[in-house]
Each structure stands twice: as structure tokens, then as C-alpha cells.
Image (cartoon, rainbow, N blue to C red; front, side, top):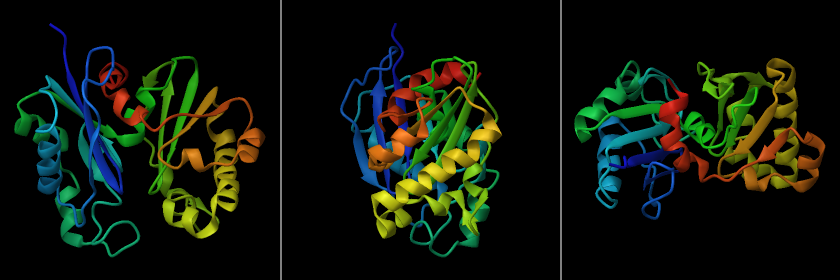
Length: 249
């Protein structure tokens, strides 16, 4: 019997989901709701249940969310602990609610199926990587998401978005507020600076630029980045939900 996977891509501005067959093909169109703030864990689970009710039944669940997670346990999640979204006041009670939460176990209990929870860039990358060498995934949206794979296997998550650059962090340096403020041309120069600053750190074989804002990177910037850097569709955040079960082991 073919296994169906409910895949949920949780971003800073929207939460979207679909159900995939064993080959990673969508069984239904993507459904989406805006990300509400403040967002406590039980509210996120409630939203996922609402999306699932609009989709065909599934045998397991894959969820990608921003932040650092280890074995399905939340270490930090930068956006969901804020009052009105990114760059607004952090609510201490939400920091406490999210930190150390086994969100993977909570989802499995709520839905009665096996669950896999990873950083959203890691699920995104699972839909892209070829398994050839060291592959880095950078997603550009509300902030910066990152994941890397070695020989097709997911490596331990590094919260590179919190790394320093030009008196701020990568996350804020190339996040959506700065893209809107600067315009695509100047923002694209920042993207190039981020990519080039990471090149000697990873010495990668290939880099994938994804997320909702990857399409905003100018052609002139892409030409300067080289053949080992490619832009990929944002739909990978959904279609990676099946393959993630294999690559995360």
C-alpha cells in the first residue's frame, strides 16, 4: 500500500501544506494560511490540524519550521517567540514554551501517525540534493535558512542565520525587511556577499538558493556567483517532505 505524507512548510509569513504520494508528487493543491502572531506551540498544532482537514488523509507527517531543532526538539525558534512577527518584541513566556519542546512527539500524538520535524531549510534541501559531495542550501524569505548535506545525508544543523555580518546577523542582513527597504538590486549584492563569505567555510560542491525571495536575486548577481550556485523553486519546501525521511536517518 502506498504511503502518503502530509508535509507542512512553516515560514515567517505563511504556513502551507499538501499531501504527497511515495514518489513526492502532490495529491492535492497546496493549502495555506498566514502565520499568526504571537504563535504558541498549541496554536501551531491547531493550524496544522486545520490545514490537514482540507487535504486527503496521510500516513505520516513532515514539518519544517524556522530555528534550531535537534531530534525533533526545539532549541530556538526566532520568529515564533515574537509578539507581532520578526523584529518585534520577544515574549519571554513564548521563549519558555518553545524551548526544549519535543514538537515532533507532540505532533505524532495529536495526529496519531509518525512525525518528522526538521528545520524548514532542511526539508527544502531534501527535495533538491543529488548526493554528490557537500551541498549547501540557503533559503531567502523572512530571514535566512540554511542546511547542508554530505553525500546526500543531512548534516547536524548549524544556525548560520545567527552568524555576524556587518554589525548585524545574516538573518537580518538579507531578510525580507531589508529586501523591501533596499530594492532587489542592492539586496542581491548582499546575497552575493553572504554566499561568498560562506564559500571558504564549506568549500562546497554545489549551493542551492531557494525560498520565496530567491526569485528576486538579479540575473547580474547570479552570473557573478558562478556555476556552482543555482536558484531552485520554493516548492521544494513541500516536495522534500517524503525524501526527508530517508536523508535524515
